[in-house]
Length: 388
Ligand SMILES: Cc1cc2nc3c(=O)[nH]c(=O)nc-3n(C[C@H](O)[C@H](O)[C@H](O)COP(=O)(O)OP(=O)(O)OC[C@H]3O[C@@H](n4cnc5c(N)ncnc54)[C@H](O)[C@@H]3O)c2cc1C
Image (cartoon, rainbow, N blue to C red):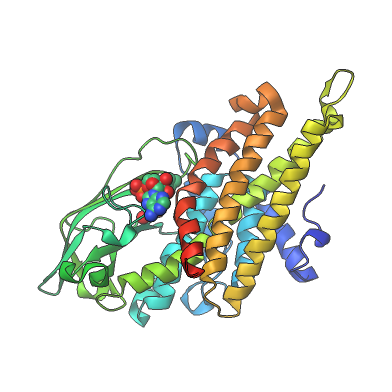
């Protein structure tokens, strides 16, 4: 067994490595048992989600006062990576990461005491599922050009518009939604609202079939004169741009943690397969075309991990790390896709068949170069931070 090895994780002390192993054991024993069926049917593993909540995993980065464990970003990322290694349900780990960084984190940073007390314990325990609605049919990469409006009404706001391609939208109990309360001010007029399932004028679409991470249903949130009470405005009016910028940096850096764990698992399978599978009277790992691919996979895993935990350490130290977050997202998402493609090649026809689970990893990797900002957008960000 290659994983977990202290040499590969110099960032962690012995206690953290033991914790990591406990998470791997938990995930292997209790999560992902119906992954193949759920991937086929596009079913979210709700019981696994609740198990993660009961284990305190969802609340890793939330203070104990709000139902969390009060762990730092580094340990939280380690937990998500270990989960991905143990259960390999990339849809589940995407949902866990999405809620952790783009729903709970903004409530923690921008919420008032009443909002934190009301929402965070339910989210951390796994009782509720949260989603983050920014993208719209006409605004994707140019996220803050959104058209959903929030008009002041007696005691709150009336929201109108549609959010599209939102992870967990069909099942969410709580949606953190950006809407413009002052369109004349452009993106400076954007505000953030917490909308509960069942609110009048709020509907959630059925899941929309997609390429990968099928266990994480994606869909639309529709607002038709949806009344949101004043106490569900997150932060002040016009805080949306700052909230988005801050939130997306956490999401960018760490959203792939679970997939990286799953990729480690796939890498180990590739090493085993290259030793076992024989062609031309010898193991295929003897052919440099195969072993070079595996060496490249190993290097990508290493660089991804170094980058991800470097950003985690920076975040823990209070740094903004905007450039590092963008680099981490760009490098990790592209590396995951490249590793999954290599894994399919190494496994030949087996890599292409559903029954071996290798092709699922490839399908699951594709979305990573799109969500939390496409690779093109990460490059733009890095360039603009360089003053270009
Ligand atoms: C699996 C999945 C889960 C998602 N989950 C969520 C979620 O939970 N919440 C949410 O709000 N959204 C979510 N999204 C939506 C996601 O954030 C958007 O798809 C993404 O921001 C890109 O927007 P778009 O699809 O409209 O593409 P577009 O912005 O239309 O881009 C199309 C192409 O043009 C390129 N492009 C656009 N602008 C530029 C530019 N300035 N420079 C260079 N190239 C450019 C893009 O890189 C891309 O190749 C999810 C998407 C996926 C696939």
